[in-house]
Amino acid sequence: MQFSRRIRVICRRSLTIALALITAISLSACNPATLRSQASQGSQVVRAILSDPTTFNPILSTDATVSRIFAMTNPGLTTSNPITGEIEPELAESWEVSEDKRKIVFTLRKGLKWSDGHPLTADDVIFTYNDLVFNKDIPTSSKDLLRIGQSRKLPKLRKIDNLRIEFTLPEPFSPILNATSLEILPTHILRETIEKKDSQGKPLFLSAWNLDTPPEKIITSGSYKIKAYVPSERVILERNPYYWKKDEQGNQLPHIDRVFLPIVENLDTFLLQFRSGSLDSVSVSPQYYSLLKREEKRGKFTIYNGGPAYGTTFFFFNLNKGRRDGNPLVAPVKSRWFNNVKFRQAVAYAVDRQTMINNIYRGLGQPQNTQMSIQSPYYDSSIKGYDYNPQKAKKLLLEAGFKYNNTDELLDAEGNRVRFTLNTNAGNTIREAIGVQIQQDLNKIGIRVDFKPLAWNNFIDKLSNSLDWECGLLGLTGGNEPNGGANVWFPDSNLHMFNQKPGAGQKPIEGREVADWEKKIAYLYIEGAKEFDIEKRKAIYSETQRLISENLPFIYLVNPYSLAAVRDRLSGVEFTALGGIYWNIEELKVTSE
Image (cartoon, rainbow, N blue to C red; front, side, top):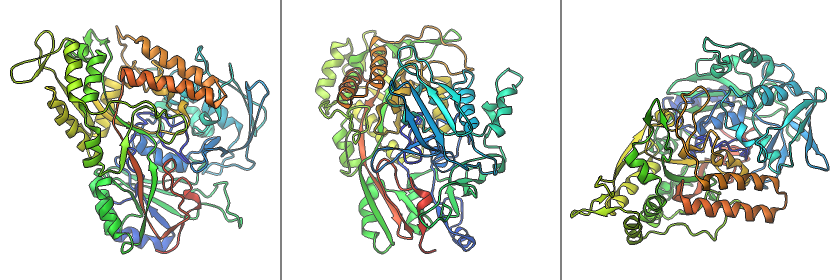
């Protein structure tokens, strides 16, 4: 899943993977006085991101950090309104669905242009889907969200004319309008990168629009385009002079000329920058809510509460039983622990989520029990999850063949000390605090946890490339549409991270096994996507939540409230948990500098 403009519910969990606690704005390596002095050259807003982008290519990205950029630079055919939840036109002005629901004709807006002035037409849509997303040589989680039915077939696209594109589906697929919110890319710029191959026979597209690409060569169709990127310091966006949208008076949008995205690799620094006046907004961590609330009037900002945040936070074990180059991905002794469902259930019972809410989230959150966002109409509140019960945890461990020595250390049946490493992304203070509590809670039932936060890119490399990890703590974005998370639950998808298949171009894995419950969950996601009756869909997705709760590929933790502080100098803010602060950034105005 992934964040995006008006939160595209295609939500690429890509290891979409949520750095979701920041809808923020800040400035780290940039001098605030310098930035404010530049305001005289035009209006600007300052938003922060937690780490350097990994790519400027939206098709290849699995990074929530850069999704904030794509939300402003690369729209899709459709979008999801974060206030109403309704699917709305974006690059497409309209669509028509056939009576049998197997054909959809999208009609593009007239006069669309790329940021270099080149026309945006049906050719760009056809190229994005057929040549990029559906290309077997290009690893993208978007592909998984468009696989339809048991056959896992992809839609077929046909150009009718320069403005109309026909999608033909192998069977009815209710999430199709959500799925068509993925970013459209320019064929006149990138086609050559598909046609040409590198020395290994891979398309040059795999290295297109990387961090070394000159910004002027990255062509966009959204409200902004990339102006500059300074590693470890900032990304700067400037308004796209060819953006199609206008306000009610006929003035071209966006109103704000520039967006600064300084790179701030610590959530505490976000707060310091905001309080110093160099930020226009910051996501409000629960531990700082009271402090900021006292400063609200004097600091000339407003704190918004959007209710439970969309997305999930969880920790999970590497369940992959496979081998690479003859070596097991997970040590066989530990793999046997991790793949024992009673072990996972015991670990879930041993984590005190209420204490986590009280201490880490300062009471501003609630337990998360399933993979669905709490605000989604598909969330099944009858599933109660795993309330803190260390005695029940120990009982399950004994039933599973584990035992305790005379110092209450947990051993397996062969006498091996139960010990594993837990990783998360360094700099995310909330996750680091959660990791420490998990370490302490599991120690109470005799399990030793070595908690080691890693740099974000190193963490992602372990999860999706080397697969050399034992236990991870992470977050994924969310939305109202359950199929937005399908790319996590299909065993062959790029985000089935607890039992990951090798990615495109990676070394093969021998001996990987897919459990029956994994197959059943995937089957139910297919059935849910076929169904158009909302009550029947709810019943299907409730069953997925039950299976996931029982088998615990992810151990869900806490869902915080979605809180953000925004400078009063910004007008037009319509904050929601789904869309955040900037879902309508093109309509926002700076009322004073």
